[in-house]
Image (cartoon, rainbow, N blue to C red; front, top):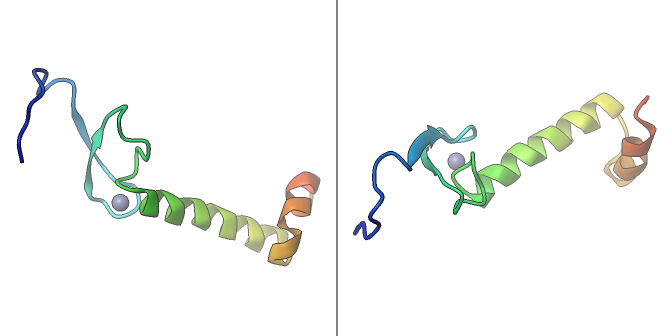
Length: 72
Ligand SMILES: [Zn+2]
């Protein structure tokens, strides 16, 4: 691994991925932050969606409708 950047140290903050607890550079160049990867980001997103399904108790096909109603 080679570090070519002149600015090392203060500009790079290391955080823990909320999903897998891996060390992640908090950087504007990381589109998945605070996650380490798109996979972890997707897993987390999927978790939220699943929670909504549980709360709403609707089939997956009705999720869009459910999202509009909000009182289900
Ligand atoms: Zn991760």
